[in-house]
Image (tube, rainbow, N blue to C red):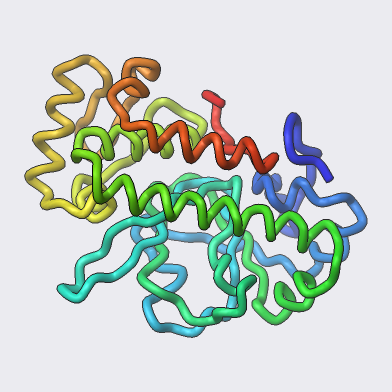
Length: 252
């Protein structure tokens, strides 16, 4: 089972290049068995894939872009608890037996499609000992560790540190230093009001670390941005590395 290094070149049924690391890491025999059940679907920025309290019928393997897993509070606000890109999957709770969405899972940054797999097929494949179950189990563990760290981060670290962490995590998952970013979405991710996001981004921009304009962001000084972030960014990266998983992006 490949977990690091170059991934094998595989094409999905519609000719799209497979870039999702979990699926691409499967041995050829396991992937071929699964491939006939995979569907390529388009998504929209801000589009919901799993809704709060809704039954999950499909799990998704991002083939690009950045997705946010959020939790909903009593005042109906959302706060991000995990970030997912093409290194992972959406709907990992199904692996633990929970087929109802909690919070909301939606696309934060658009850059590619998602590969959908019916829950019935996913559950059947994950119930059998082998490469697929092993890989999903590792990713589930990494997701839980990421969620725990993000919970601690939201409780203890200031908004500038958390904003820097989010930018770095997004930067790891896209193929460019420039990516779309709406202030309103970022406010949801950080659990703050939109004016607070504007102030924080202005501070990072005045320091020369980023450029933010017209719904787009450009990372200018990656290393300095890492020093502005709290330790949670490195801790989360460390969890994935320790488990043999890999976060895509030109900066890893």
